[in-house]
Length: 183
Image (cartoon, rainbow, N blue to C red):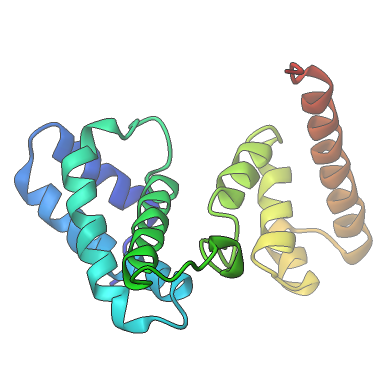
């Protein structure tokens, strides 16, 4: 069974509160994800992946108090894995200069780790029905017929409701951009 990001974060919060079993479970669930991150970072150096994962696990253990429980855990873990991958690449060059810029795939996530968080924050600004409609259509890819049945709407009414929900979402995003302080 695969744990969600929220479940792993909850385990880390419990660990920070002193729960050793939750900490062991958290690390056990993080290790495969960290291995996948390291594999993406080191496509030409797969033999370093396990070393990177072990170094990252040690860094997480030593720095776990620096994680802000109010923020997502996986981006924090991602940065640690990325830095350990860079360290591993530097250590294997043995005096040979290899610019990190030559490794364009290093640290490049397949998807933005915060994209889901931003989307959920945006959808939270909508009325519950509108958010469920947009989530079903745009995120989950549910077909129009199923959505029509789920929401008790005919095809035209579904299109109108979806259009209005997307408009509200766009308006909310526009308002947020207008109120974002400039640095």
